[in-house]
Image (cartoon, rainbow, N blue to C red):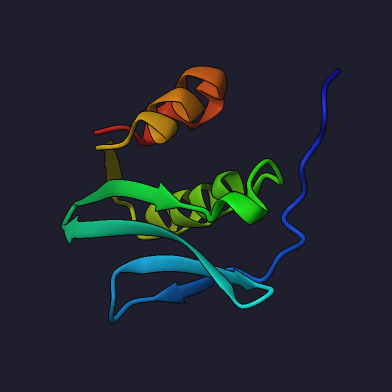
Length: 97
């Protein structure tokens, strides 16, 4: 079964803490990064177990990739989830450093 995900959540880009965030039911989901222009290092995603399986990590990552693309940054993954995402979504591979 193929499920199409749409970005229906409001993802916040917290530039101070270098992460993309989404909160639900008082739980914080995040994707942390380090910026070393022109490269955005995607460090890891964290989604609490109670919110797992809902596509939140993918939406956080897509928000980060959109930001990287709009700033002409390349991305480098330091996370197994992000590596897996790129292997399943080749249309984003042009962003890889």
